Length: 337
Image (cartoon, rainbow, N blue to C red):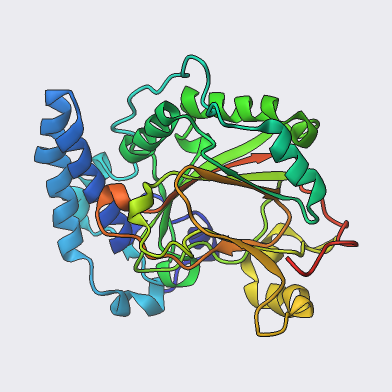
């Protein structure tokens, strides 16, 4: 029988997975097994974890046979549990410490005045920051997101996109990331005052599917930071973020504007249609170590992307949210961005 709405919303939990997610976890197991400085860790991931994922992956049917009942998700079978999958899947089996960096995370070229000016003078509010992190911080954040086994969320790949999610309230709460979030908050008082840290997550993507669909996030300020090395992006004009110039209307609840894409397009985006096709937006191409700050109530989605194969070349973004969503202020929003 088809999955219940609550099962879909939970991101599949520990009883369902998807082939793309198992492939990600398998790649991560090999990565940890080949790069860890701890011999016992290397042995565990190469000798136990990776073979488990290989075994499960071999039993997952083609996506076409799972599409009707589960939207592409695979329910673990008794043989999977007997093999020990519950001991490793969606478990924090490798969470080495990542502490604050002495001197902070932001790069020496970070220009707070320029960022705040760009935010202040744009309507809707959007600011792009290149080389936001120092080389040391970028390397540490990238390593953290590659080795920590806290990527628990799986989605129906054809409906919601092929990505795995990690969240601050479910494992992604290392001191390094919290320090970065608070440092950025202090650095931009004109933007951040009155908007405390709200939430934090990271997404890791599979290029065989789309990214995140059209949605808005419940916050005042959204910081979307791109971590993957530049050479992994095979199309330099894409891979980033499409930010539309419209917000949810007052009274439209979270489930409606984040799940009912057809209604959002018809009622909210279509009135902003521009000559030549599409809707009023600002599209920011992907660039390593680039952050996009924008009004989090603006509808947005992952741009189309094509990244090279291999675990360390998967598209990864880190998102930090501040404050409460601000809606009801569409008047004056430009439609020519």
